[in-house]
Length: 230
Image 1: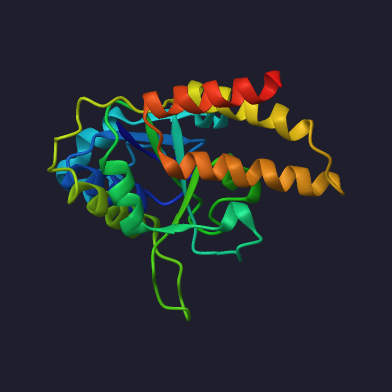
Image 2 (image 1 turned 120 degrees about the vertical axis):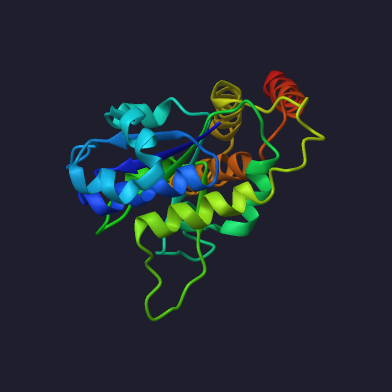
């Protein structure tokens, strides 16, 4: 299940356009984190067109909601190098391929504020960071445009139902894997504390990007348990 999560939206036109995009691509869930505008704002409803029902059903939540989804996908036009792990993204087409494989799993597409976007703390919470290729002179897209492009890439790859019987790892599975993995890292000597923390960030992102099946996740857990017992 795909959920579009907007952080502190302020402009009713953007809110309406996002709802319309969600409707365009057969998705239905919109979450508003600390919105600065009412979801029933007249202008938002006008712009939403046939997506009015998406707005009316939208849930208003606080930041704790971000911990409830199984996979959190952040969006950013500000990229980092290979050494800046949290800002090392995949592109939107790769995201579409990955997410189209997953069924019965809660996936949150996290869209930042209209001005500054996501902050570092929010990006660090994400399992995956995605970017949309755009001009280097002006790479930042309007939030509704970003939502439309991301949902389109997922939508166009969802026709194949051949793996619908496969269950994928959820948030709890990933937390158990990282708990084991962090215990292993704690047994290893690093020259600095920062290097150990970098390893934790790298492997959190690796497991997030890999989109493990339940069976794969259980195999990883079993291996990590055996390593810990040595």
